[in-house]
Image 1 (cartoon, rainbow, N blue to C red):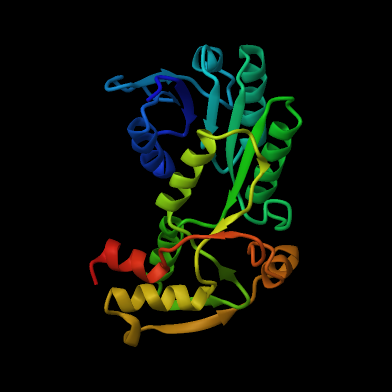
Image 2 (image 1 turned 90 degrees about the vertical axis):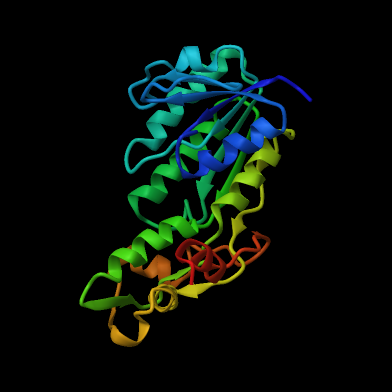
Length: 257
């Protein structure tokens, strides 16, 4: 067992909630960079800071050898990541592990571009690095279909497909990568099944006992983003690592049906 301290950004989020106990079980002390104060306990130290505002980062990276960068948001990911790697470089960090998204360089939407730019910031930082691209988490897909399921008529975007993956499986892979040697871009991690958006929505409605009572209407995603989705730009159909837990498994666990 080792007492090496690992810095985790985004440690209080969905993915961080799975990663932190796994790293603690592996014997590591953790430092978590967060925008809000938390009481430190049981080998987990919280440091208040803000990646986008470039605040508190120097204190967060001081004395750590590995940074697991999970933090992300709708805006500013690239700038936040550049602030992080600059501080990490000055502090002599030996390994930066980053979670990105499948299709980061293929889907022309702001979220994907920000992830791609953040990947580039890490790769060009001069620091040893590992980047894992993962598919959309079951948790995110559930949020989307739950919202759509509240509409009187459920939209069904044609050509929109997903390979949703379980966030716990992504967390386990990230822990493995964090405890290993820097590996650059590693194989993507996707779920075991490709679903059309309509299939995901119907699965959710069935699990809620509402499937027979809802009408759906096909819609077309316009523009470059629509073409990228229809071409499968957000999918990884070759050479990807594949998780085991399906959308149906997740729904059964989460909704109890």
